[in-house]
Image 1 (cartoon, rainbow, N blue to C red):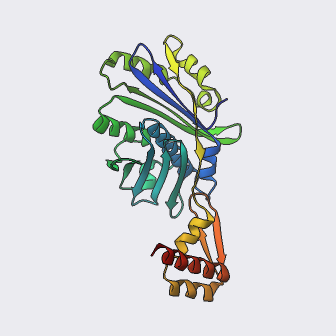
Image 2: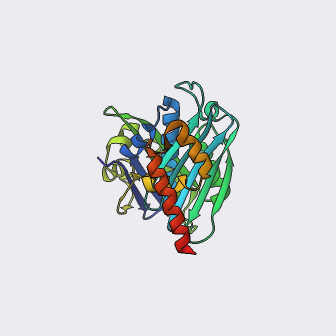
Length: 291
């Protein structure tokens, strides 16, 4: 049983590549940071799987952010992942959301923003309308229009052994132009037979053998996927000293301390009056040293 892992594979004779991602703990960390409604937990899982599958296509060091924005009860759903498969995510919503709410019920009129941010080179951003019944169809439309490489996605969320799981598969024609539509359609039909239970519980070798035992499949080294927030007490302290000192003093006079809350992981960092003074003193010393 493979969890929190991304596998890449290649059909040797058909010029098609594939990816398989299976997540439990990384997904659970995201959906337990707040009391998300069930439908929003599902959407977060789908966006997490999609982001992980897309970051697997990166040929450079950097990150991809998938962000759903809309005017519905859910205003924002965002997942960020990098080439090391460190992921984090958050959503913002208001009011009640039905358990069977669709992406359109939740987002209303909106769009998907895909941001590719390489460490070296230029940032790229694509904006996609929410055209399709679900996130899978929306992303397949994006690939058809922008990448112009035939791509299919299978994204599943649900429970296995009492715990939340999210998993997905992607197959894509290789850009060398040697793949045929017939080969791709054949693999599509095989992948369409995958069951949620198989995606949530089987290791890559067994799952790929069940689906494609007539094909020659080369499976590459798996890559672990992990939740990573990146927040810290020192980063929170650095954020405090960017705020006007008078404003900080007003909060301290009223509350007695300053608290910063991280939306991504749910951690709060609290600084009392003496700690805040120390932060500003250190900041002043650092500025003098620079000059």
